[in-house]
Length: 490
Image 1 (cartoon, rainbow, N blue to C red):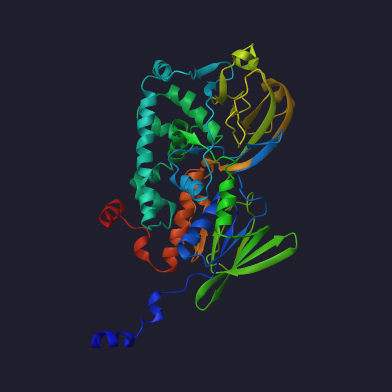
Image 2: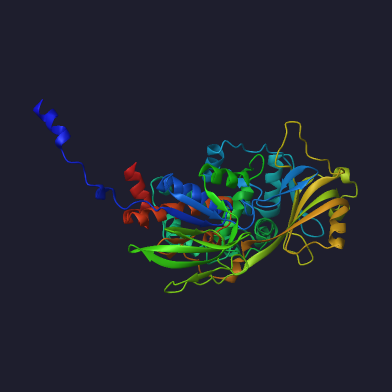
């Protein structure tokens, strides 16, 4: 009884033991998938009381864009997501979205004169054709990709335990050691030839996949190539209603304040011994600025993509020396010219997707008969002799003669020009993640590999890194031998 009476008299723990107060405000530059995901993960880490301002000059969604044809929407940007994309799956589940129903269709690889490889409806026949043309190269490729993906999947365990990395090199080392870092410095062709894949298989199949995904050759780095090839091998999916719904959904969920303005600069100040960042912007109502405890830049630091300045930083923050690969998406509603592909009778044309080899005369990288973002139960893919919606990927806009080569006639052409992917041969170094104390750069991850899931992984890493640095939990940053640590924590 005496002890019970004394309990209320015990002094409360001092408030200082709780550590520093969370940041009051965080600015995110860009409202594509990277910006939306980093806002979501930052709120998960710091709590709902943090103010999140997201600056976006264009519409929410970035490269996850759609175009409208005959009152139906179609993906003109990043179209498909790999089955192992765990963060993307989690976003869809959290937001109450659905995976789009898959409409099967066969693929083929075109050399400019004939098809070098054709998919059939029979799995065993497809395997036999691969073996007949290329020996066991496709098995060696599969083993190589699976080994890379198995190690890459470790990132989800690390992030679930709150571990983060202050550089892309440290992140890669934690997954696959120096071998993963080296994979950003050597080509996918070199790596595959080393494991016994034939030159012919590289020239026909690997080149076609990389032209379709990155619009580039087999000289792209091995890690970026592995991620692209994993997508070509595994089952893919997309979001019902459009992939961009993930971006708008995450921003709505976090109650982020989306500011329709272009960021023109970030200047450094200090307050109570801590860095304070002033974001300068330009919107429809003129110029303005606001102060933040933390800033995450999710647009590429390249003059062609986000031309803003950094002021009062020592040493100065420079644009990352790099270039971007121009790519063009043409969404064409029309009748395919199947004769160009060796099928005079359009009714006999069996393919929904055409990849191309690296042939100088070919003016397009890939084309596919695409389905709308909303697929009803009764939906069926158009027959080859019917007018259908085709997405054509090329490096330059198609001229009238090129359109006439691919299509007998067409109703409409909608062209989107992108600076979508890094030009992987333009640099050999990876950009930083930490630009200053609480100023972070997310888009650099695309120089490792560019996909929706890579951006989501980078967003979670930045949120964890920002949290661990803010609260000085250095044991959670750049730790070695993480696989062993994670096992012991379990």
